[in-house]
Length: 194
Image (cartoon, rainbow, N blue to C red):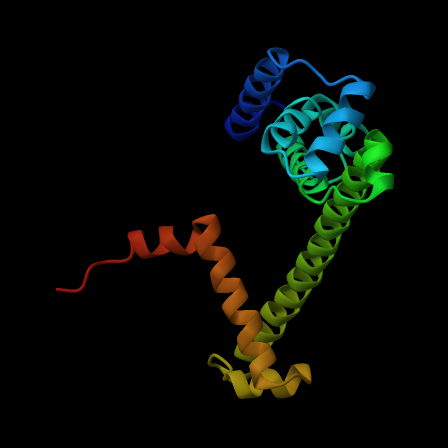
């Protein structure tokens, strides 16, 4: 299984990001504590340095979430957004005194949520694909029986669904075909009306 062009572009972008991080000095624990105090008091410079100085820490936290359904670039983005939010929401004594632990909690929460959302989305897609397959099978069977295409109402009755549910499945199928290019290609291949 080779690397696709899309995967190669992602790898190139990820490598570029890693190269950019090389030029940024990470914050020490003492620097984090001092900057967190200043950031909590509203210092924009402290916030900026705290974010930049912890980008590598946020990146290191994505390792255990790799290969769990989200591309590395998405994980990096989630971790970085959690870092920014953690810095912006500094203010409690606890978050200031142990910024490293506070950051770890925030990034871990964000990564777990992103992976869970992806899993949920994947399950919904699988369920939808199963419904589409059933609709296709019922539609074909009814067309053979009736000698014509079944109406939406007839399909709904046979599938014990509402007309709206059947229409929703049809719409999602059409949307998916448009995204994958199947529908677009069939339109391109259709003869033009004169």
